[in-house]
Amino acid sequence: TMRRESATDISTTLSTDTFELANICWDDLGFGLVETDYMYLMKCSSDGTFSNGELVQFGNIELSPSSGVLNYGQGLFEGLKAYRKKDGSILMFRPEENALRMRMGAERMCMPAPTVDQFVEAVKLTVLKNKRWVPPAGKGSLYIRPLLMGSGAVLGLAPAPEYTFLIYVSPVGNYFKEGLAPINLVVENEFHRATPGGTGGVKTIGNYASVLKAQSAAKAKGYSDVLYLDSSHKKYLEEVSSCNVFIVKDRKITTPGIKGTILPGITRKSIIDVARKQGFQVEERLIPVEELLEADEVFCTGTAVVVSPVGSVTYLGKRVTYGDNGVGVVSQQLYSSLTSLQMGLMEDTMGWTVAL
Ligand code: COI
Figure 1 (cartoon, rainbow, N blue to C red):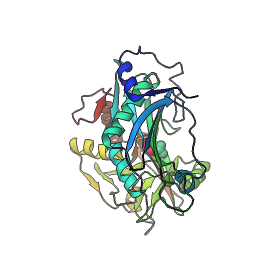
Figure 2: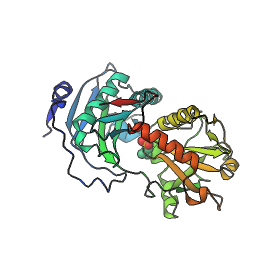
Figure 3: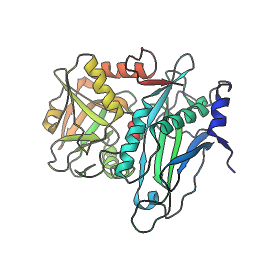
Figure 4: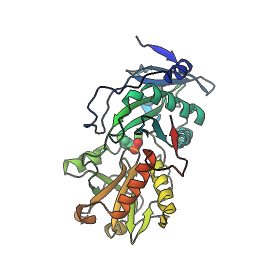
């Protein structure tokens, strides 16, 4: 049976918890699930409001075989990270941005969503209750995965009658097996990630299942991941399966503009702001694939991938390399700026970090 504690009980006892790290090897973290102690659960009542969230022991959940999420994919997810500073304190990065994005996605998917305050509070409580799983400074981060799903039963196609908001967490290291080394991408010429009018611009679970086939084929050929082109013209860059893409040419930074088919990444937006603040010119616009092949540097951004340099891109059998197998200077500079802000190594002049 599950041990349940109400969220309010927990927030009053958290400060007195003695700090102790979980007993795992912190040097081997990749991006895989490490089960932690607690998860957060909150249900929505029939009037569309969420209440009575609670932290319960991490474990399987019960769902109707006929639930909206299992049958028709009525589900959204989010991803954010918490880092431990050297002094043991914990920093989260822009959780209210994830809350807002979940609310936008929920509108598109006909789901009610937690308020920004409910979301941020729930994330804080979940991280604090699992704080022994936040890796030591420099060893990775705690990845926080909020889910919103149609948990009520349906049979005909319709919005589910009941919704569940859930948060679980897992300590993670680097996303790609390459670690921090440049990744090798292949431009996908058959499949597309998103279509105009579709759900590419929201973080619906279906966007991720639909890229598995192209991603698996690319991995089987030795590539790290797939870079998608727009489905109307097969010409303009969109994004990678799990991250946004940027190109650098003559120190000018460019990324595809948000126009419905591109996931509005929080790391993407943060990198744009950091780069502009450092004096770079940044453009958001359509990028023909030819510009990718002529770029000085290419990098990807995402919560999971952070800033990942791209070492090569293959398009229609032609392979173009960047940075002589090293990390480009602009990519390196932006990676360092963003991560030192997220990890609390640099003063947060943007006001993006939330201390726990
Ligand atoms: C993230 O970067 O947090 C994502 O949601 C991408 C996911 C495929 C790991």
